Image (tube, rainbow, N blue to C red; front, side):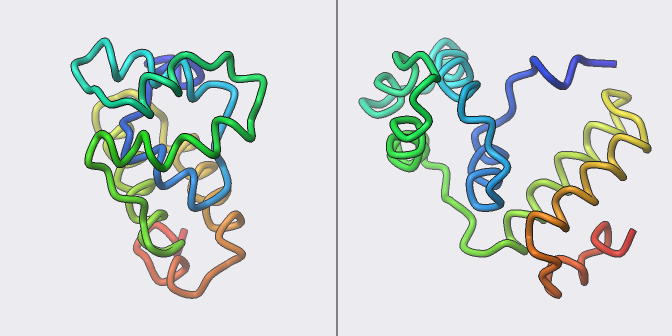
Length: 128
């Protein structure tokens, strides 16, 4: 299994975390550096990668522009963000990178972060 605490999430998942309020802002500059190294580019992304992660406000301020640099849309609702998150969790589980128990925990966390939004609860994994 992969180390989920140190893996670099895809930018689309980070956009979902931004909407849901579950963003680990101290890790975002490190992720941005990896995205740069992976061939993505943009002024805001470079600035984000240059931060040390201690100033969460600076991370939150730069992240939307950095996502735009990568042509990643920020989900328009908690349900859209949860859908992206749930797909990521399921993909990790199916590839052997996460256990079913971990997925259930992350789904429960996502539903709670959404404020038990009925649209999130109506999603297939939201009904767990």
